[in-house]
Length: 243
Image 1 (cartoon, rainbow, N blue to C red):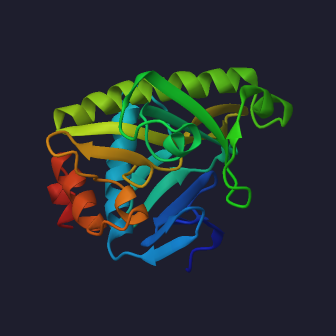
Image 2: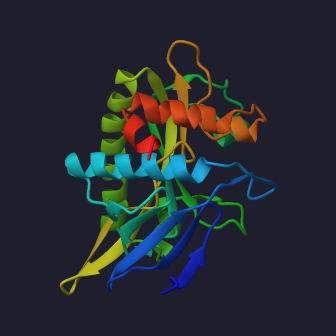
């Protein structure tokens, strides 16, 4: 029986899962940047992101960070819990890069004095504008307890992810995470959702400072999948890549 599509985003398609409360997340090869102003289809990107994100979500679970991931089904699909996505993107920056440099005239690539957390409204139509905590509360996007949970979890992710990448010779410049509400056994709680891949991180080789993330597409540097694959190999995912 054909799967029923329920949503299509820039990089993924969501289908109804085999059981209530489950969704199948399909990773596309589409690459977008600058709120869809730049677009291309890069063969194999979705496969790499699926494999890397599945590994990352399992890694988070092992480190006590609850998330929507259940299991990877095949090269392009994974089974996840159905959640109500909070329309807030949480961005953590360890270094100045991207829009932070453009907004404040900072030197590209400088290390910040401490991790910086920013909130953005999850809306391509409005250009993902910055949000303050007051915006989030007044617009009823999240409660104060949920905001505190998102900040605390994001800081923990930064610590364990930074340590993980450091061990394999990669600098974690910044990353973006999303959260969703899951309802089970009559209660609702907030958990990590979406994905964790080179599409939503800035990753640089420690020795050469070579870019290993989607900035290669944004800046027209080419070889996107070559470097995504290198990230996967350093994470020890050679067997999964050969499936």
